[in-house]
Image (cartoon, rainbow, N blue to C red; front, side):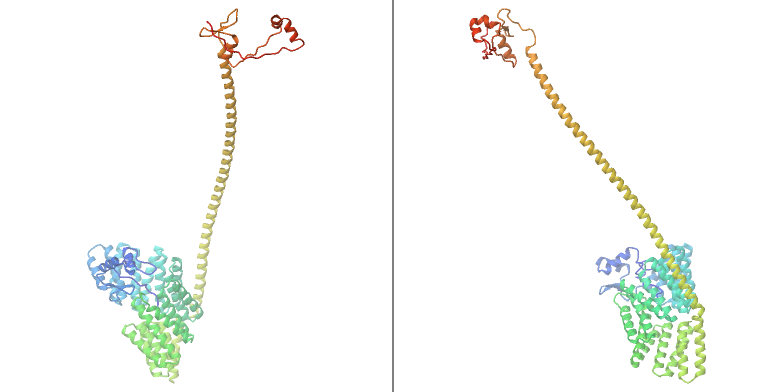
Length: 586
C-alpha cells in the first residue's frame, strides 16, 4: 500500500489539494478549524456551505454519511458553471475528478479529468495542468493501468519542475514511485521514492517524509535488504510519533509487521499489526477509502498468518477467508490477489495442498490479469512448493523456472548494481546539497560577523568619541568655572574699588567748591548763611575729627612762663576735646 494521495476535506473547500502539510488557504479553512473546536457560528456557516451535509460527532467534524466528497453536489456545481468562464469551470471539474477517484469511479474520473485538462491547457494554467495530470495518474493507478499512470505522473512531475515547488514535487515523485513499484520496476520505484524523500525534506514536510520513508523501506524489504528496510520503517515511525501523525504510524507499523513476519518474529509482527489497526481506526483520522481498505486487508492478513505461525491455524484461516471476502466485496483485484497468496501459504502450512493450489492458482491469474508482477513472483514461488509437495516435480520445475525468469527481470544483478550506484549518487548529491547549504550558511555567518565587527567598531568609535566629547566638555566646563571664579574675584575687586571710589567721591563732593571763611575769626558760612567754626563745619560734612593742641609757637605766647615750666624737655601733649557745635550766628 502506498500513499498516492493525501486525504482531502470536502471538495467545495478549494480547488487546490489539501493535506495536513498544505491546509486550505482561505476563509473556509478558518471555518473548518473553528467548527472543529465547536464554534456554533462556524458550524452554521459550514452547514450552509455544504448544504447541511455536516454534523459534529465526539469532537470531530465529519460528513454525515462519512463522505467528504459528495459527488452529487460536485456534479451540480460543475453543471452550474458550464457555459461560464473556463477559469471557474476547470477547478470545479478538477474537484469532481478527485471526488470520483475517492469513490472508486475511476472511468468517470478519467473522463472529467481529461475535460479539466483541456481547459487548463487553454488557460495555460501550469498548476492546474500539473494537479490534473496527477489526478489522472491516480485514476489509472487504481485501475491497475500502471503504464498510463507513469505517463500522467511524469507529466505532472514535469509541470511541477517548471514551477520549482518542492512540496508538490515530493508528492508526485512518491506517486510515480508507487506506480513503478506495482509495475515491478523496483529500480525506478526506489529512485522516485528517494527523490520524493529529498524534496519533502527540503520543503520540511514531515508527514510526507514518513510516508516516503515507509515506501523506501517497502522497496528494500521486497529486495531482501531487511536491515535497510527496518531502519527506514523505524525512522518513519519516529517522525509520525513526533508530529502525532496517525496515518503515518499505521502505514509504517503495517510494513514493519510484515518485515517481522518474513523474519519469523511472529509475536513482534502481531504487535505491530494490532498497533497499525489502532492507528487506522483512530477517531478523527481521515483516510481515503482505498487506503483504509488496504490497511484493513493487509493488517488482517498479517494477523491471520501470525496466528497460524503461533499455533492457531483455525483462527488464522478464518481471518484470512474473511479478509479475502472483504477484498472481493470491495471489487479490488489487487487485494484479492494478495489475500489469495496468504491463504494459499496458510493452506500449505496446514497440509491442505489442494486448497493451497486452488488459492495460489486463482491468485496468480488475478495478478497476471492486473500486471501485478511482484505478487505474481510470490505466487509462482508458492505454487512451485505446492507442486513439489503434491509429487509433481516437472510442474514444480517449470513453475520455478517461470519464477526465476520473472525474478531476474525484476531483481537482475545489473539493476541491483544500478540501484547501488544510484544510492551512491543520491548520497553524493545529498552531501553536495548539504555542503552547499553549509557554504551558504557560512557566507551568511561571515556576513553577520562582518556586520557585527563593523557595528562593534562603530560602537567603539562612538564610545571613544563620547569619551572625548565628555572630556572636552569637562575641560571647558572646568575652564568656564575657573573663568567664573576669576570673574567673580574681579567683580569683587571692582566692587571694592568702586566702593572706595564712591566713598572718596562722596568725601570729595562734600568739601568741594568755594568755602566762604571769615578773614578775621576764620569761621565758615554754610549754605544757610550761618557761621560755624572750621572744626564744626568739616566735622559735620565729613568723617574727619579734630583734636586740639597748642603748637610750639603759640604755647609760649599764650601761656608765657607756664608753658616753659610745664613743657620743659617734654613733647607736645595733644589734648582732645569734643568739639561742640557752636551756636550759629548770622
